Length: 246
Length: 135
Ligand SMILES: Nc1nc2c(ncn2[C@@H]2O[C@H](COP(=O)(O)OP(=O)(O)OP(=O)(O)O)[C@@H](O)[C@H]2O)c(=O)[nH]1
Ligand SMILES: [Mg+2]
Image 1 (cartoon, rainbow over the protein chains, first blue to last red):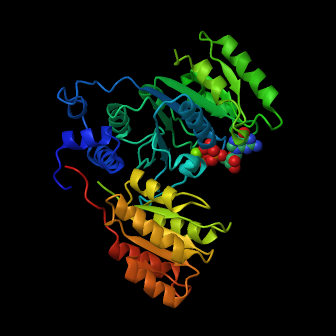
Image 2: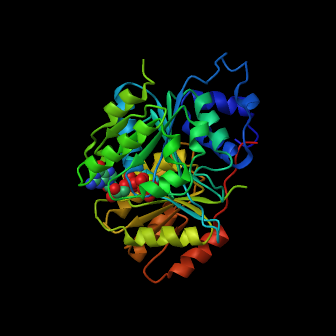
Image 3: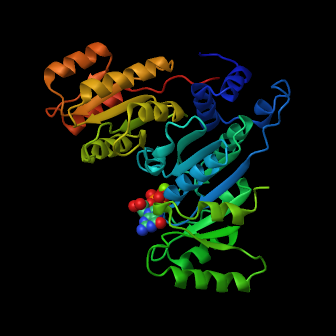
């Protein structure tokens, strides 16, 4: 397939050819892909921009991946085609990366309506990677209804996701992650919605109360929703609170 | 820049993935991007994952004794999906005669308990390359 024109590959990917889509994603990741490449008018006249991009960020281990898997299941129940990009850090020493987010998502691995791609940050700070935008644009161009983005989750200042997503969810959990650190880093400010996951654990109510108090001091009304991703609870409520569905 | 992407998977029903994790970490330390899929993956899940992730290689860790069933199935599914060129390597508990047979069937390399982690890394460095991408 070497030398297959981009348009042809794009058409194949739209028809559900998973290898074609994987090739496009590799190209987007390694060389970038421009809007012009993707928005080609001769490709059945579609713009490919109708999908919703939802970003999820938050401290390590709060259950982002587990909750992403719940969201995928709920969107699938609604008949949506879903893509997931999950970011993990590259080692600054070797450039290698261990990409482990999809462990929590493998229940969807043989669903044709779901495409999951793990992405290494390759030294880029901010929670995504240099070519994240191109990868998202590619997924939208092949008509996924929903694109879910899980950031690196290193607990640093991962605010970049808000600039690529239609909605940004900050996921927290009782005990994990220092709320003050996150507030300092500006991560709390980018949220359109707070998810307090691990609602089966102690400390949820305190955390929800603190978040609501903080929201009350601000100018935007940011919903706070509790979830128990490990028991598949809360995805429908979160989708409703996002306000992206008709 | 295209780094070598390796999907490391643990097919079969047993619940031990220590070996798979050790190999996954070692490949990461060797500069590769390693997608680890966790325990109890079916050949269908593994192959779909390899396709989605654009894997340049698939590493399988097998301890359950079902390798003569699971590994050929992974090879067959890769071939059915027009991805026979994606190299497959295995490790775990695999008797030498089975290892010979698996290589005949198309597995690029079977590691045994005699192979050390540095052996695996050296092999991966010398052997694994990014497969082509569209230009
Ligand atoms: N008790 C409880 N545990 C949960 C819940 N959701 C996830 N977990 C567990 O929390 C751990 C971390 O889950 P992940 O989904 O990997 O968390 P993550 O935020 O994606 O982690 P990183 O990507 O490593 O930052 C796992 O052991 C999950 O099983 C929950 O609702 N309740
Ligand atoms: Mg995760």
